[in-house]
Image (cartoon, rainbow, N blue to C red; front, side, top):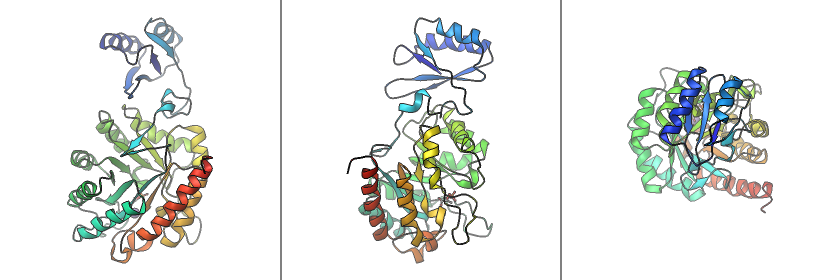
Length: 346
Ligand code: PEP
Ligand code: MN
């Protein structure tokens, strides 16, 4: 990781630095921050001669070498002071709540508009709505690109940023072109490295966009989760948020094995913000409030909760796991109080 003395390298300086690292089989990835930019050395940066030559340049402040499988996401990385903004909220400064339907029903858009207004009223800071859905059953509703217009219309009406899952390159492009603020990588795709790369490239020049990376059901060690985030960040946009959402089920009764308890461990290893999804973790509306509060107690920076004005009229996961906006309002009130207590602000 190269830190220049000035806020960023001039094009000539960048050329000189690139020429040096190229000799050693490495490349440079600029990470452009609002205040200062840093330059990641991609490749094997162990060669002392390469480091010495870089350190010898009079416009370089220092070279930080992090021996970690995820050197950009590492807690010791120079990105650790980076703050991610979602709409008007800055993660880490307030509890961020993404709420909305699992799936937008393109035949009944009014449910989504009503849900969007109601979750905003309940205190949500961001909207969610499934446009394309990864369904286990190939004959179940797979989503519909038409729902993208409904999602963006709800964003305009409420003034809230929106999150939607994308599963392939076409969807990534359609979502970004439509103005989706946060791309969601679902649990089933969190280990799909070519999709992670596609998203990394697509958002590399879009510092106004962020990525919500769900934890795969099959991820084991923490490094596997954080390294998946590194795939995206390595292309230059550091706005990646980690989202535990339950792993392979072990308890008879919960949809998945709740994993909000990994939050302190994540926070020890990486600077990335953590938004926990209690809805997919426990998979039943009545269990969601407890899981949401547990996540905040464990140190989550935010929550992603499925909510619907009339869950029984919803599609996808909504009939089972969406909470009503009234229940959501209660969760948010208690979660914010707990968040303040944890931060010593109450
Ligand atoms: C969802 O958010 O509706 C979803 C399908 O999430 P996950 O990938 O966590 O199952
Ligand atoms: Mn869902």
